[in-house]
Length: 532
Image (cartoon, rainbow, N blue to C red; front, side):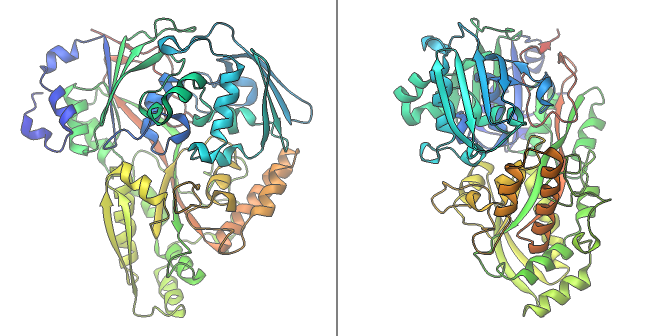
């Protein structure tokens, strides 16, 4: 397949320049692994500042964690985790103290010395501190202290029991271990000049291109492909041409209706790796902005939006969700256990009646903004049309993906679409999106509770505290289900679906593992190979 320059209109300058190499030459290059990700530019390579998921492809290779699920899995049962920086670990009987014994001799990149417990404590304390710039400090609220009694021992003491700590905290992106010396030396520059201990180290960063090189001194399995390039290609046509033409080896698949099927029809030899649950898709009503302070309006929107039609329009399989937890999660609301009055099945007439009751019999108009990335844009355009059918005009403005995250995190939006992957810990999505401590802040320092639930109106904080302090897992799951029902009753945020995370790769790129249906958003490519 021969591609012209004209066909690449819309690509970044850096990526377009890379096309100067003949395709045949690039296809034979087994020394560089090239990824194409769906965003306009690099957001950060600092684990505690991650807001756009595609940055995790670089983060995941630059940094190590204490433990990791088996290759191809995103989360796992506690007993299934494998050692990384921690060789062994144990949990106290009350599940409130976890002790990790570190691997000796692990070296940070670029001569920054040995990784010790001091670096782990520094990394974890930093992740728990919003003043340090941590955007997900809320996930650390149960951690009372991180102690480093000797250079190779780390002790986490918790306020409440957490038998799932490996999944809920220790394997989170912001639990990646950074070099204390490098952070203190570089300050804000660390975000684009990071130092970790992973199988790849940073070579260079441009606005839309990250270059990594293999860490030849890595303590574990060394990367089989010496170089990795992560191109940020927001234009969907450019990303499609890149994978079909062989200028990249792997892309984050397009999420628009029919997009994946179209690519696979053009080249049936391409490989498709699917993980589910991938992204939880939730729609937050900013109750601090009119008209969303009115519960009747929020519920009218819930009846107006046809969630099943949205699920049916997306490929591959995209199950409808009922609560914030996807159906596969323990404690989730499902087709079988959700009360009929909380299903909010598509009912335009009921939506119109609620709007009329709220004083909008002649309809209403409001403005919102959204990311131009294909998955975000597709969903919001469908929602815009469905709302129009009940007399609601949403003036929708699009912006690049990186700017979208920056703006929504400053409480500037009205109807906020959030896509994000979570570990299979049923309290985690509620913690991130529905408790008052996660309220979005105008200075950008808050969390992902974009509705101000639990602040503007009473929320589920008491139930959440009971759940996270409940040592009995079955009782904890009952409380999760109760929280889900309460959220649906108040309707501060509405779950839409759980989209699959899909990567498409060229057949000459092989993986040493099978991607599981619970693999989450990214995985390590250390063992990947490229065939001649």
